[in-house]
Amino acid sequence: MSCKPTRPCLSRRSVIAATAGLAAGLTRSKPAVAQDLADSLPAAGDALNKIAPVPAPTLNFTNAAGHPLTLDSFAGHGLVVNLWATWCGPCVAELPSFAAVAPALRRAGILILPISIDMSGAATVRPFFASHGITGLPILLDTSGASLNTLNAAGIPVSIIINTAGQLVARYDGAANWNTPGTISTLRDLTGAMPHHDDVQPV
Image (cartoon, rainbow, N blue to C red; front, side, top):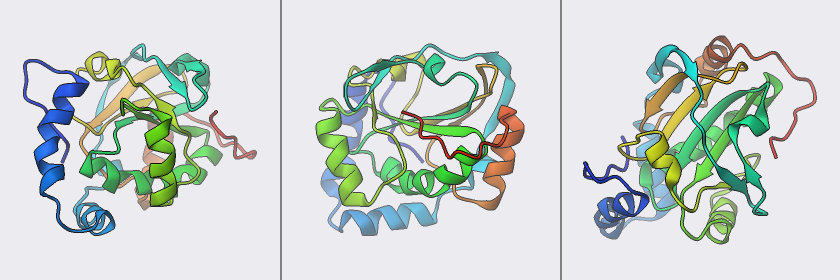
């Protein structure tokens, strides 16, 4: 499941417009809605669409302090790159599974890069993380929403897997549960990452 805009005109604003009706119609609490969605998510390890390795796309984003970053900033690691937003219900359901599995993936040499496309940037994402108990994940931002078009994304969330050689090796459009027993081994195989013992933080 994902928050999908209407093609052919794809932009971050069109994604917001397409999901505004859904958000307005939610009468239950955010945690309750997120839990309902989380219960129906497929396991990421089984859902990934594997592809023949191709050069990773060029994504431009920043950290919470505004420092510019690209995927090259994390060279040598396996990467799980996720485009999401605070107003996207499936994203909200998926994000806790990223937070839960992030420490084990870091020790395996794999970093999760959740890139928010919220237009107000850290001013929105930081309190969202706090109110939803999201820890252990970096605040990364693409306030322009350009990454949507770079990935030719029909909606969010969308996740791509980058191997240690900087190649795109898998993709999943929609929300998934990343905190499953098979996820770490699947991502190790896909990325070629080697275990780390320092539990390094990505930014």
